[in-house]
Amino acid sequence: MIPVSKETLKQTIKCPFDYACLKDQHFPKCVVDYSVENNIVFVKEVRKENCPYLMSFGYATLCHCPTRFEIYQKYEK
Image (spheres, rainbow, N blue to C red):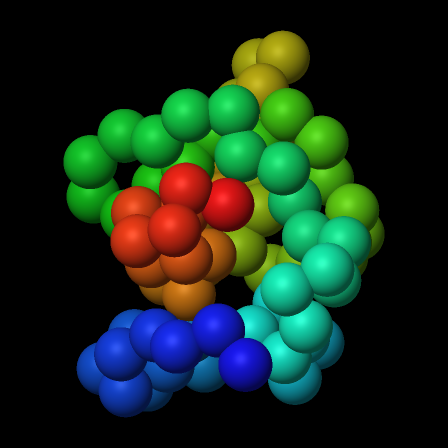
């Protein structure tokens, strides 16, 4: 299991996938293109449709999932 802070998990209350991205490092998750401040990452490949944390932004897709952001910040995955 990929370790993230308990505080981050408490903030990720809308995850419909039971935190699958934490349970298996090889789980196909959204591929991050780059990050910006305020816990947002731009994803270039979305592998989980109907995620409440994804939002279209022009030609890009924003992900504001606290867990996904922490994984990217800590492990660059």
